[in-house]
Length: 198
Image 1 (cartoon, one colour):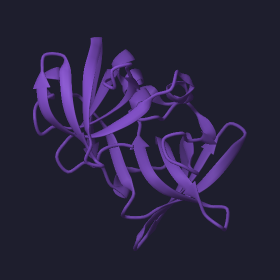
Image 2 (cartoon, helix red, strand yellow; image 1 turned 90 degrees about the vertical axis):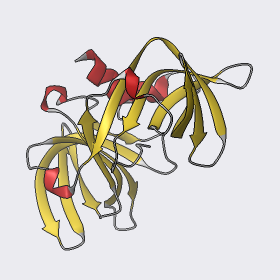
Image 3 (spheres, one colour; image 1 turned 180 degrees about the vertical axis):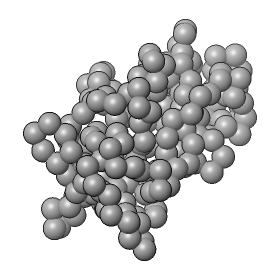
């Protein structure tokens, strides 16, 4: 249970991840793994040296689809507001049932500019040719969200530290050190077919 909770902090689905000291999101491919140090080529082409803290945790994500988003399910949606007041999903994380209620509510999402995070129960789903619309319900409100095919839809999966090898697709929240390197205590591995979480 604890590993799942920390895993979701990595995805930025709870406010706790945003309330800590200044951090940086690192997303990319492991170029080299030596002991507890990763050299990551980030999505923007930079190289980042990341020291993994003692007792660091690892979680995985697998690709999901709108068909996996069920009425009554609990999801976290990172989205951008649209002119009509609705939300356009950028990323959808389908929580395991054991984590229902995690970070429940609607708030700014510090991972992407001008975005929001809504962790809530799916009150209604409407399938469309080009995706789906969902109504998310939480104490004190609800949000309507459009989920198009280009949204990153993922769900949790087990992962092992042995998977942190060259070629692994990883994402993490890291703290910059004085020498320009980084330190991280949690790493998310995107399985083949899954996009890296933001």
